[in-house]
Image 1 (cartoon, rainbow, N blue to C red):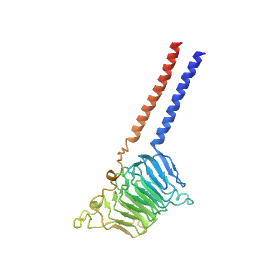
Image 2: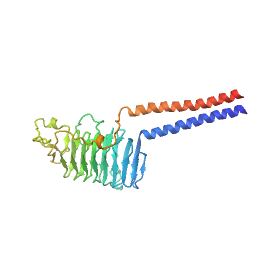
Image 3: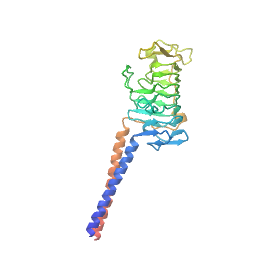
Image 4: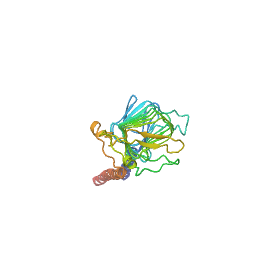
Length: 316
């Protein structure tokens, strides 16, 4: 009878150990990457690192995942933290209207003070508009060169992508991508001022768009003979680019391209310090740490159960 009781105790200890391991693994997996949704009713699903106060959603730490915005008239404040993706889209304010026209278009979303890394599309907006992107950093860590763009563009390696989305304002951002700015299909009235733009812009079937006082990383490659205007910090030759499809005979240009990059966003001076994200190392390190912790838990619990069993046997 006592042997049976001891065996049952040992089995219970092992089952408890297994439950701990399962729950811990689920917890780590959930923290590693998640799809976060700001729902139409304003509630948040997928993370506890974004706090809501009325229509303002503020990051309280670095987040690994992508954000689906399904609510209009909101502010997403990164507070200097990082949204680390997995090679897909960082923030998607499209609400799937291109696939489901019955869905409501998203309007008037502000994304500010946010660093977005490891995404093929940093921010994507389809239809809707009047969005504001201010003081954001969209890294070009998945981009190595400025690809030749064609009509077969597969929506990859884009900084900010606007498809049929109008009235948007992009200011004081550093934007990487190939291209950094992508505006296609009946966009109009967008303003892009005082940004650092890495790998240029691509526009097609667009309306009146404003580009002014931006730093363009490829400026001197395109205009090697340009010179600064009277120490003003502005080049004497506009940065110009044509409609990429060839369907329209249109030229877009920045009439006051900047000589030097802007210190925008300047997280270090006005926002909490952001820990650097090592894109190639985050998940391997997390995996090793997870394995070590799980093994430690199993050894500890199993050892305690085995010790109890030996103690009871000796006592008998």
